[in-house]
Image (cartoon, rainbow, N blue to C red; front, side, top):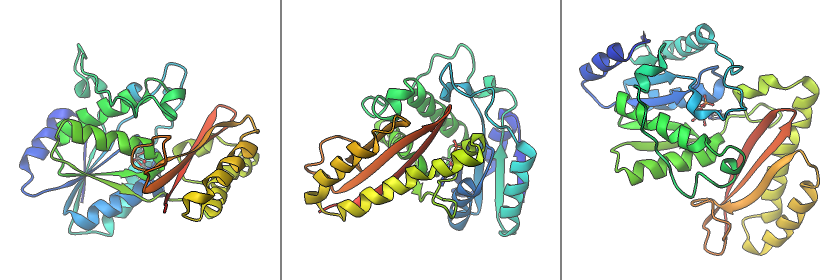
Length: 284
Ligand code: AMP
């Protein structure tokens, strides 16, 4: 069963009627198999899953694609219904607020800022982005009050920002990170992939291929890191890289001396589209 609510009052009434723990999947819509994998996982563990579709200006910088971002509610709902039909005993509650002011009442003075993490990597290119993400997700957590929330590791830095926020604010919410869903070519699924021309889609494969190549060079051994860094210097001679970096997988620190896992994160830019991807590996 799928219920759709577009107002805060309906959402809150439904939430207050829930008798058992439920999961939550926050999204900006324009759904693909990556989003649906989060819903599938949430449905595996809960009888009820809340699923938000909310494109909100806070997550976008002043020069970014907020107005252009694809809004495809009917198509999204069809995908959610298809997934829900495979779980006839379960319930999906879709929340897609028509009026963003219901989510952010005015005057809007709340801002959640996860210091440190918000300024590095993506934060260098999108200075207000992670404050926006943390603030929006916090507000949605307040409205939905889930016990468990599901995020894709595709946005690895975002996942760490949310986990840190939950820890800092002692929110009683379990944060689950789910694997990246890719096309057969290796390209990570993203709503923004549709901005790419067929030729750019091929060029964009360099991103996942470079991550795999670096993982192969490192082979889980700290002693191979120098070779990997040399490889990065050669790869990033191509100016289309915003960044390609090896960081501590838990903290995203540059200092890898005590890292137990590594995160290799990259953004390759084709025209105005920034393709974002990462790979995680253990290190000895
Ligand atoms: P978005 O709609 O882009 O805000 O994404 C909503 C959620 O879906 C976030 O937790 C993303 O990390 C996750 N997501 C987006 N793309 C993928 C993917 N290719 N694989 C797994 N999760 C994804």
